[in-house]
Figure 1 (cartoon, rainbow, N blue to C red):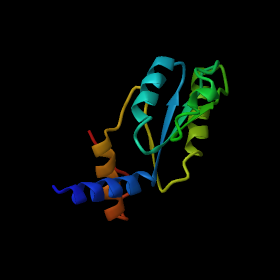
Figure 2 (tube, rainbow, N blue to C red; figure 1 turned 90 degrees about the horizontal axis):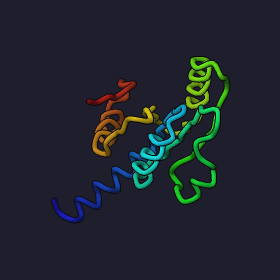
Figure 3 (cartoon, one colour; figure 1 turned 120 degrees about the vertical axis):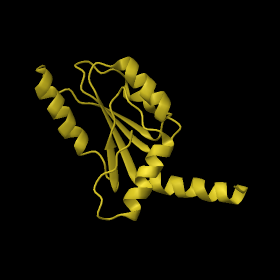
Length: 133
């Protein structure tokens, strides 16, 4: 593959990722969130972390150098399932892009997997979701 093809491919990938928001809900998993932040920090996609912990796992100031990651502390209830569903409801309202994905705080999407899913969705307007293994 020539350098021009690689540049073209990177540009197309960036354009696709601009259409995606990833939401990561989490409750009481500070270490897993740190790992997620490090993973997503250099991938050009919008990420919203929604922390439903009673006490915030991070300060908003911790995210000044990560333009693509937003942190939201959103504790709603001390009752586990009520809080979980409230966190998920809050998280569902954050994406403003054409596509969105929910990612567990202990999971990752590979860059190539995201691009493949987005390419499939862009080519097939009759498809509502894309998943991988």
